[in-house]
Length: 519
Image 1 (tube, rainbow, N blue to C red):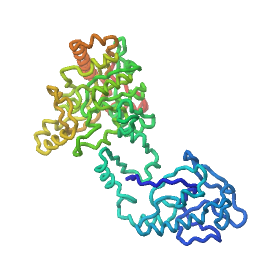
Image 2: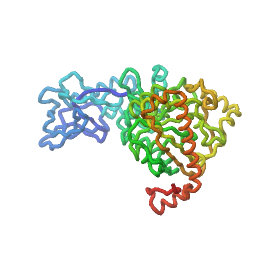
Image 3: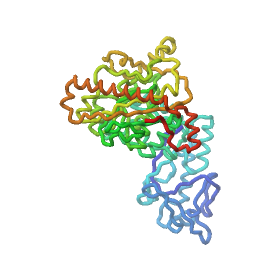
Image 4: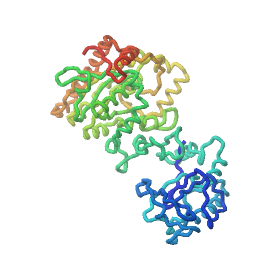
């Protein structure tokens, strides 16, 4: 558990690290225990010929530099040439600080006890950070451990304090790092910018804008997001097909336009299984970041309860997801983004038994006229394979018949932001629940992106509701056509089963592309 208790100071005294026992030579005398204290040899005067060792100091940008011993103005007896406070003063004030801290059972709360307004600081000395109790003097550290040796958080009860702050601060969000220590900012792999981006805390103006304030992930950030999910792509070995302008289907993403705005409209698999391979392949093969239009429950909770913490959806926000709204659609298209839309939404992603690959789209168009306003290309696509990785055991209807799960569904739905309250039909059924799925031996995922549909130059034509609805029906029919094509073709794929793919890769290398059906 990491905590946020730090002390800020500016000093010229180099860090002291616990290593071995060192005592300065006479006449300096120290009356406190300095066990587990290490002092650089260049700071301690010797009798005759001091060795030319170096001491460490920090530059303005925090880079560690070396200084030779003859540049350190410390002399025998603890007196400096220019009258500044010396090592003797440092140890004396450490002792006083420890005595004062014994009253509350804790150790020093900052690294260097020397006065910050004295002449002991070097000019332009850097601003440093230290954790409470890390004082460089062994006794202070021992006092902390003796007081907190009961299997609880050292230094501070982090989890309890986080919950208290969450209740006091109206917009506070908690991020828990169970495998981290107290020096969280010093740990390798921790990226504060990624945390702020995932929490949607970074903004340029008075209010956060999910489109204008978005910072795309760096290659290293993408790897941190992708690596924990890589097993999905390894298990399903997705086949990506796209359609060129001539109508020819190819096994690649060559048919995808590079320039935006582009709107991808397709079928949502159970629990969104298709998202990881889809987003990662676009990023790695075409350097295209898909901005997914997501349910508001990933960004806002009406109240605390059974819904997952918002931190569970940080990876979606890091990869560019935005809450669905007309304003966000407008900003995405105006910024020439590649937008990913599932008109079926939660109803498709939480479908019932026997409803695989069935579209649950609204009766009226929700995206055509907005796309035409900016001349966006519309690419219908289909994805199949969910029935090859799991079997739906208990769906929404089954869970509603069990009192415990029925109450749970009602509580979850009350906590989530409502969508399509005025819609009619099955698409309006947005009850939040988690179906129970029996895993299968993994099959294979298949994607087909249809021929891009141009809206450039059709702005006036598609202002008509009738014309816009006709194009909407055309897009829906193309998605169903893509689904039918993939369902039929996968029956002829000799490597649909994972064992056949593993055997092929064992012979040709695990980085080799596994063949599929004839296109």
